[in-house]
Amino acid sequence: MSQDRYETAVARYFEAWNSTTDAEARAKAVAAAWVEDGTYTDPLAEAGGHEEIGALIAGVGERFPGFVFTPVGQVDGHHDVARFAWELGPAGAEPGTAPIAGSDVITLAEDGRIRSVSGFLDRLPAA
Image 1 (cartoon, one colour):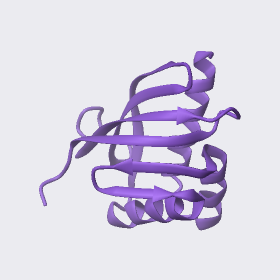
Image 2: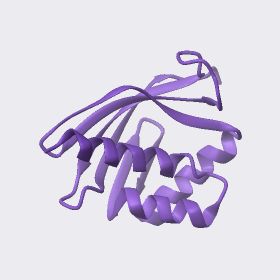
Image 3: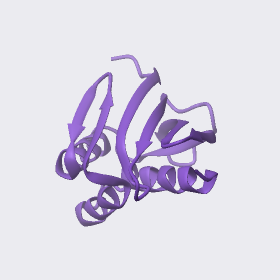
Image 4: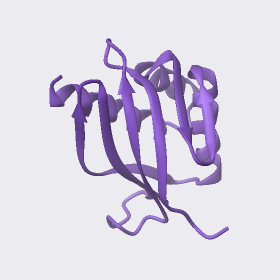
């Protein structure tokens, strides 16, 4: 698989996660990023299908208004799997300063959309 395929999938993933305030744009972005029965799992959340994933994204946007997901480093992939790191913080924040950071491993379907996401949280704000 080409590196472009992984980078395209990850770009669509970030577009979905950063479409928290517009329900219509979010639904389109989720559908472009995930297959219909796609899943998302991290230590704090689990969602399956476009509706649940969209609701999860909306909830993160409500909890962290004005925050954006930003990729960190390069996308690494082989076969139908890719991994990448990210940060969630205020728009325009200096790299490395966001209060939330993690990395994800995605599995791609034949059409290049995401079949599954396994998320890992490396940095969280104090409760």
